[in-house]
Length: 456
Image (tube, rainbow, N blue to C red; front, side):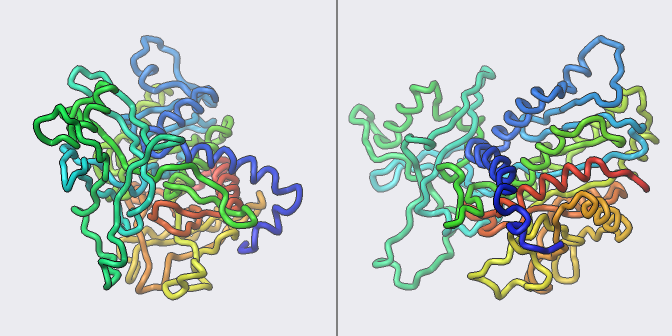
C-alpha cells in the first residue's frame, strides 16, 4: 500500500503496463463523446460474446439466461449496462462498477451560427465545471451527430488528424494589462470561418461556412436536432521525459470507464453476477434520461432477472440492497506546482495505485457517501490477496476540497459502495494527466472486485 508503483513495474515488468496503456491511448484519442464511447463498448462487448438485451426482450424464444451468459443494454446511445449472470441467484447480490463517460467540454447551441466583424462564428454553452480561460487558443475539433427530420443521421468528426481545426480566441496581452481570467460564458464563441460568399446577399461569411456543410447534406436548421461537442483536437500522448504518464482529453472519467469495461470483458462465469454501468451527465449532476438518476440501469436488471426466470419485486429490491459497488471516478492527484490546497499525507499521489475515497463531499462531508468499514475491510483483503496497490485518500484539505460522484445516489438503494478511481492532474482542463501504473492498477483492482463474494 502507498508505494511508488514504478518500483513494482521496473524493467521487463513494465511491458504489460505499456501494452495496456497503448490501447487506452487509442480509446482516448477516438472516443471523445459519449456516443463514441458507446460504439466502442458495443463493438468490444459483442466480440466477447455479449448479446443485446433489446434483442432478447423482442425475441419469441422461451430460452432462459443461465450462469455465464453475457448481456448488454444501451440507453439512447449515451449510456450502457453490461451484465454477466453469476452462479448465485441475482437476488443474492450483484458486484457493480459504475463510471461516467461524459467529460467537461463546450457544446454548440441549437442556433449557433452568426457573424461578427467579418467572421463566421458559432455560439456555444460550456458543459460541466471548467476554467474557461484554459479552453482559449487551443486547437478544437467538432464531434457529434446531426439528426434530420426524416430520421437520417450524419456523424460529425471535424478537426482531427490533418483536418482544419477551430477554436476560441483570446485577447493579446498588449490590450489587456490586468491579465484578467474571468472569461464570461457568452464570450466562448468559436471562430469558424473568414471567407465571404460573394453570391450571398447578406451574412456572407456565415453563408460560406454553411455551403461547406451543405456538401455533407447538413443545413442550418438541422443544428436544432444535432448534438455537436467542441473538444480538444489531437491524440492522447505519453507525458514526461520518462514517458511515465499519459496526457489526453476526457480522462475524467474515461480512464475509469475504460478500465472498468476491460475488466468486465475479461470476466468469466463469476460466482455473483457482475454489472458494469457507464453513464452520461455526471458532470452536470447525473440528471436526465441518460444519467445515473434515471431508472435505466434498474430497468435493465429487472429485464435480466425476468429473462433468467428469477424476477420478483422483492427479488430486485434484495439484489440492489445486497449489491457491492465501486463508484469508479477519478480523484485529484497532488500537483507539485500547487501544493497549498492539498494535504500531502491524506490526498492521492500519482504512481501510488488506485485511490479509494471513503467519503467525498466537502465542509463537514456535506453530500457525502460514507463507506462502511466492514465493506472496506473486505476490499482491503481482496486487493492485498491479489497484490493490487491502492491508497486511502480524501480530495483536498477539509475546508477547501471535496467533490461529488454517483456514489451517494446509488447508496440510496442501501448497497455497499465506495469511490475508487485514478488520480488526475489538470482535472477538467483540455488536457488531463494520469500515471500509466495507476491506470493499470485500476484495471487489476476492477478485475479483482468482480471476483469478490457478497456477504451482506
